[in-house]
Amino acid sequence: MKPNLNELPKLAKDKHIENKKYFDKLKKKVPKNLDYVMQDLHDAEFKKTDCLDCANCCKTTGPLFTSADIERISKHLRQKPQQFIDQYLRIDEDNDYVLQSVPCNFLDTDNTCFIYDVRPKACREFPHTDRKKFNQITDITLKNIPICPAAYNIVEKMKEKLPL
Image (cartoon, rainbow, N blue to C red):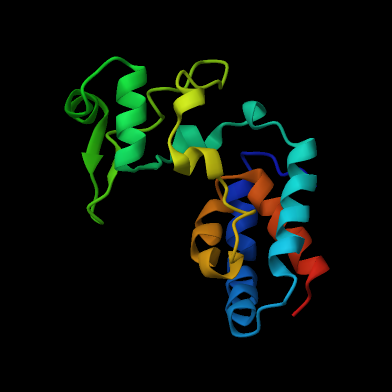
């Protein structure tokens, strides 16, 4: 199934309680092969998913910027790190650097990224469905399901492949 971006928030909302219960069970009894299964599901989904068709993550949310991200991106933009921070970032309620506004300033009209080669780690790893110890990031995954059609599909396949 390829959820349409317009219907994704409703689909995710309808599945939220089911997904939350599933992830709660997953945390209590972690399958030995979880990370392998997640890597396979992630790889299979991204063989048929082109993020440039969507870019909803870039349009609706902002990544966390680490100090390494700030250094790398500011150097690429030929700015001092503080200039980059002042121009693009703010500190959020968790005391992390995030974008001042969304959609992302670096998103082009064709959904490509102006700073793709030096993009933040959070962008490179999104939607985090292939992370090791996946059971530790289920809260992030619950937040990503309404944003990312691929995350939605991966979790639906996960529930089929690893019934709890």
